[in-house]
Length: 221
View 1 (cartoon, one colour):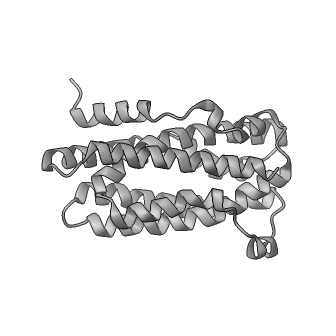
View 2 (cartoon, one colour; view 1 turned 135 degrees about the vertical axis):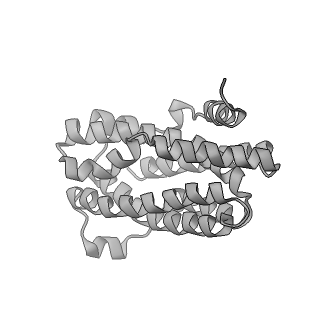
């Protein structure tokens, strides 16, 4: 018999799964029809997203430490993961032809930066257990996108393993993170500090902002 926490994570992820049509860009990377300039824009947008999310997750870990230690472990792992992803992002950017001068001069797209802006809002305002549930549901879709992108970069654009490492990192399942999420949700349920309605609302908005990210990049083609 599974624990209610694991059931809740599974059903919430299924309920919030995005419509495949909400992401027009990933299929174009998969079939090689996305221009390399768009790949460069993806790298540049992520150079804004990743450090913002890393700081937001670090703040959530600190905020959760006393009352929600299980959630603190989860957010700490996320923050460490973002730091590792940031190291890998530079290889993808170089493969796209992005130089330091371009990075410094780049003006990010509002539609792409709505997602990290909302993650920062959650870090300040939302109950930690609710954020764990919402993020875990969102990460399922993000991981799938990354797996598809990594395949497309290799088969359609000839990118090396090093250049694809950023996407490989997020595409790889993490049983440890899944267990940490389950422990955090379980603790939130047991303590009465998880509001399923709020968590689903947060998850829905995260998925919407995720779709905005991909649509903004597509509109800029």
